[in-house]
Image (cartoon, rainbow, N blue to C red; front, top):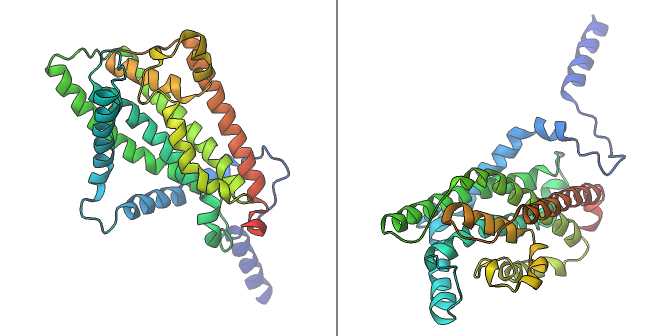
Length: 291
């Protein structure tokens, strides 16, 4: 009898235990393991979304107030005072369309960039795929993007009813692809920064400022058509420029975009994603020794 009981206990332990082995290869992403922890990812998404505006008066309305106030400021400063061209599009829609796309990408980078430093406590106590944290951030930001996108669509319909020169077209069907590309680019860039900040803490302080500079180089406040043609290739190397130009072309009917520009943007985004995940996997093996 004792042997039988012991055998049952060992069998039960084998079913519930998990052997944690080190990665032998930088490209060993263990997607199957990450999928097994999908419930944890969804739990993190719920936690982050609820915690963002918990105990605030306006709650999720801040998701709409922030882009609205920023759009109004851009309309005043860049549209009325600086008089920058918007390709004859309504200034409010021009700036709002750029901000909706940019905010999603920027939030993914800014929040993912502090993955190791903000979660050092839990990483040192519990095992789970570390990549689950940045992925949950990207999904959480998707909720705010959808709210802001719906806000943009309401204003788009209003301007169409008013007879403004806005021409949505069938290219809107590529919007989900652009969204996935922004998510991949934001995840990759965020993982790169997060990996580097474990050793270089100064980088964490520079991320917000760097993202602001990146925004002004990303066709958010001016159209690509206003850049001299001989210099446009430099801007195309910024993968967010073709994304934002494509977004405007699809929903507003104006923008400078070609297939080769989208191809370059997609290639850079995928390369950034792979580089970011590889660096993240490498750093997570020794992160508790440096954070």
